[in-house]
Length: 200
Image (cartoon, rainbow, N blue to C red; front, side, top):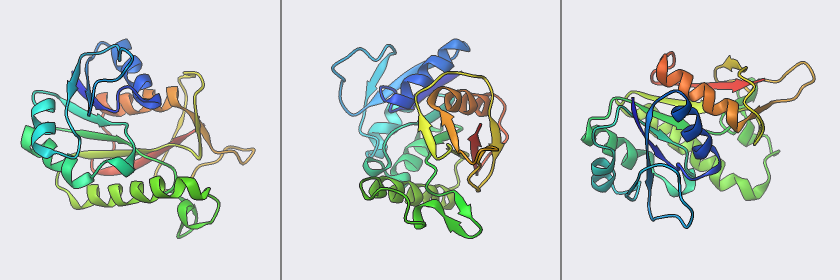
């Protein structure tokens, strides 16, 4: 498949590029400006918040993956671009902040997220709500609470809207295994117009 990645040069984006290429997909990066270092994939320049420019950049793709920062993106603009370009699917790397840590209470509302991260987490919640209002075929993947570089273990547990923890009470997943999970979803869709989550 032909896949465009918004944020292909970021920490998670690079893992997505690696995972997609490992499986034989054709990857194109979308960036607002040309990065200083070689992204390792063909790059098209477009502002993700400009629907017309983004639609031109993603035209002809089988899916778009978003691995960028929510504080600098807008769900309505990206949805508009996806619809305008006729791209069948939108897959989004989300955050853990919108997962329910206890019944009825999202992690973002528990007072445990450092203040410096709250704007990004709040923007992620707004983005997810924007997707729910849309009529595109979207999927939003929330990682575990601890989401860091690691290794591709090839294993993970699937969940829904609740924060998952292991037997020790830890909630964690690596960038590499999240990339694997999102490409698994690309190849075998199971969460159309839904959020799902993963953890070890």
